[in-house]
Length: 502
Image (cartoon, rainbow, N blue to C red; front, side):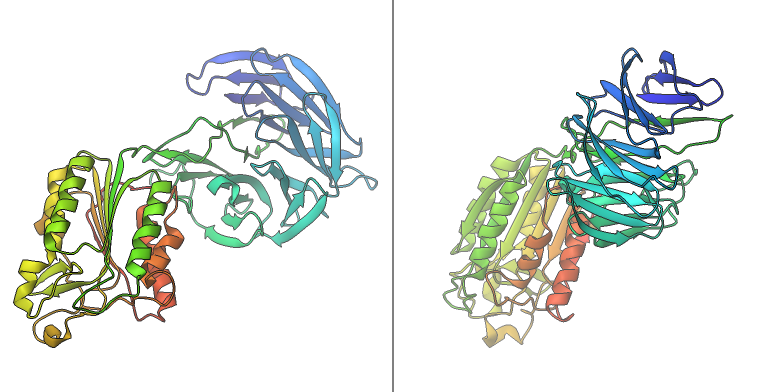
C-alpha cells in the first residue's frame, strides 16, 4: 500500500502500490498528519498530528479511534510491534512543560500502557525489536537508546554520526540498520549498539548508475533516498511469509507540497531459493604410515556436518577412509544422490599434497614410500572436479582443509609435497564453481591446537544461514590471518556467476 497526503486539501489517498490504482480518499488532519505507519498485516494504519494519534481502517479509510497523550508534546514518529498489538510513539516538547517522551500504546483498547523518559531533545525514530521485549529510540541529539520494556530501564546508549530517522532489523533482530539524516547508514549490534559497519556516499537509488549495497548478512539490497532507505531481498532470495519488525520514517514537506510514504511489507530473513542442498564431508586423521593429526580432522568433519545440516544440507559423512577405492565409492554414492542439486558441496579435512603439478587427497592407509606411489594410492582432486561435471549441480563448492605438512618426509623435499597447487578453472570448464583452500598455494596449513584445525575453526565461526558464501570465505580468511599472525592465508578460486547464499 501507499498513502499520499495532500497538504493543501487535508486529505489522505490510499493507492495500491502494485497497480497504482486509487482505493479511497478521506479527509485527514488540518495541516495534514506529520507521520504515519501501517500495522504489520496492513488492516489498519495510524497517523499523528500534535499530541493525537488516529487509527484508520485500511480498506475503507474510516476512522476507528483516536489516542491522545499529553497536550504539551508533539508526536514525531510511530512504529508497531510484530503483531500490531502495540504501538510506540516518540515525541518532542511543544512547551517548557513538555518532554521528549516515548509512549507505548495498546492499539486494540486505545490505551496508554507505559511511558519512558526518552531523550534530551526531540525523538526522531523508534522501533520495537522483533521479540517485542526491547525498544530502540533515536533523538535529535544524535543519541541511540535501547530500553527494556519489562523493567523500563535504559540498557545502553550510543551516539550516531547524525540523528537517526529510521531502523531496519537484520539477522533475526541481532543487528539493526540505522538510517541517519546525513544519508549515512550504520549497522549496529542490537544488544550493545556497537557499530559494526558504515555505508557512506551510496548515492540515491534514483541515480542512473546506482549500485545497491548489500546488508552484512547478504540478504538484502539497500535502496537509499533522501533521509530514508528501504530493503529489497537480494536477487538470490525469495521473501518468506512471516513478518518481522521494520520501522520507517516519513519525510515530511511543508504545506503546499504533497508527500507520500510506502509501506514496504516487512518479511522475515528471506529464505534461499537453493533448496536442493547436498554435501559430502570426509575427515581423515588416523594415518598409519604418516603423521597422525590428533583427531582434529574428525572433529572438523563432525562439526561441519552438524553446521551444514542446520543450513538445510543433506550430508553424507565419512571418517578415516583407508584407500583410494573408498574415496571412489564415496563419490559414486554422492553422485547418485546430488545429481542436479542446487548446491553440491565437498569438504575434506586431512592430509593432502601436490606432486608433479597435481593435487592429491591422502587416504589413511596410504604408504607412499616414494612419490611415484601417489598416483596409485592417493585420490586426485581433479577427480572431484570430474565428478562435479557429471553431477550437473547449479553451484559447486569444494573446501579443502588439507594442506597440512607432508607426512612422507623421506621424499617430501624432492619433487613436491608441500601444500596444494592452484587449480586452473579455465581448464576445468565448470561454471559456478568455488574452490577454497585452507592456505595459499605451496604453503602449509596449521593443524590447530584446540578441537578443530585452524581453518575449520574460523569457517565454523562464519558459516551461518543467510550469509553470502564469498563473504563467509572472506571473513574466514581474515580470522585465520589473525589467528596465525598472518602466517597462514586461505586462498580461493571461483567461477561463481551468482550470489551463492547459504
